[in-house]
Image 1 (cartoon, rainbow, N blue to C red):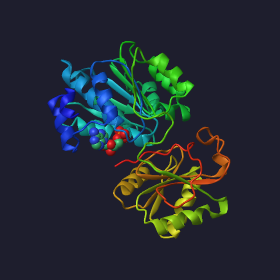
Image 2 (cartoon, rainbow, N blue to C red):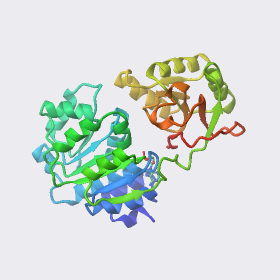
Image 3 (cartoon, rainbow, N blue to C red):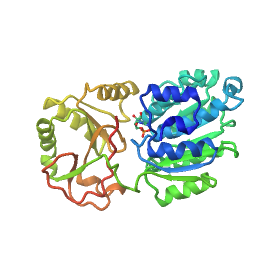
Length: 358
Ligand code: AMP
């Protein structure tokens, strides 16, 4: 199947083809037609499947096709709200909206904390069609009455499982209570726990279900290896792997922010260009670290496990996190390593590795 067969507006197809994409991914093939018809959607899809374009493209199509395509500029009320768990995801999703909507007169804005609120207020006053927001800062705007959600036509809950993991359920419910009853709802989640199902059943009406990845499994593009080790040897082992495997773009997960900082320093000391990324860093430092990582200026990006991310990925685990939800069944200290042939492979089904992105 080609993108041209999906019935998307010509201006959107032009932007897609400028990105070099001709074939929609499986989630896009299923989600785009469903969203274009106005149906609610429940999609089980991990990062890396192309899910962002899966909802961005048909949303842009719907906004651009209606007779009210300039409505937000007049009413100053956004028409689409995308809720995401992290600042980084807000930036990425909004970038996708800009990329795919660049030939359309549609304005978008990323709304997240850790940066000044005033530029966001100024933008909202001018009128934006699509708001991509993290819950906390969105609620700040709601409290200050600098955003009005009464004209939302489409509501997207992205990475719903992470939202719940991060304790956003109350915030999500507060936001949903402010939306008009009549709207289209799209929900994306990599996993479907009973909590997620409950949230979905309250939010979605007769949804189209799209399931492109087996539940709770890693993307097929990721090969996983587990190396048994102990706490004392972990850092040396990791430095050794960097030195001997020629890795050049590796995401390392630590348990805590402090652990991420310490590990990044250790890697730097052994000559591996590295930065830590987490919520205690300024937004400028976080954006710079991500950009440097994407551009290949950093070999390693070290993040606490609450951050999911890009490229070859490693979960750097300590026994103390083994009790958390994702690693409940594990009892040993382990280092989960991708594509490391020759290492002893233990049972590793419990590790939900991130997918390989471009
Ligand atoms: P996502 O799962 O939305 O985070 O997307 C993962 C990556 O796939 C992003 O870098 C997208 O730009 C890229 N992508 C999205 N759709 C396609 C497509 N149809 N063909 C190739 N790459 C794509």
